[in-house]
Image (cartoon, rainbow, N blue to C red; front, side, top):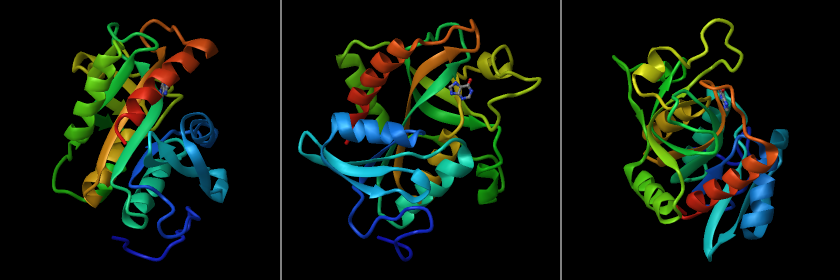
Length: 239
Ligand code: HPA
């Protein structure tokens, strides 16, 4: 199962300390919050670079949670080590995104069926063409039925993994991205999906819309908490 020696340069866990299914928020303190509030018997497995990681149980099923940091290079490192060295099979990113289309409202859920990107990350697999970064259909199906059962507002489609949060001259809303159906922008999924494909693992990105690049609206702290809980209930159904 494992390709090399553990601990890895970026994850200090020993053999068997990380579950096959792992939730991946960007913020390591979010990982701690998830472990403290949603899991039972959680034990910390990583503190290297303060990228906190925990393994515990949800409804009797073993599950891990770890921060990824921001951007394709950061999630690229962590997801590679989780898949190739720790045997993770189901990697579920739980994050936030900016809406690119008027029908995608703040607080809605977005399931990233595909991830377009401005990053060079995927090009470095050196394929003789453009790779389509897609999620696991099995995880997506389960997530969609969990959202439907709960009556949550959700969208399924393409997202954009951007390398630039503060883009000086091309905010992606109002461009060809949204014309071509891209729902929302974030910064990590293309690296996660391509790494999962390369490593034969399953990945899905679940996002709550924290702000709209169409209207300028942003969620309040209270709204962010409620939509975060909605997203977690869906994500935990997948483990
Ligand atoms: N850009 C990139 N990532 C994001 C955004 C955004 O506007 N909002 C939330 N994550």
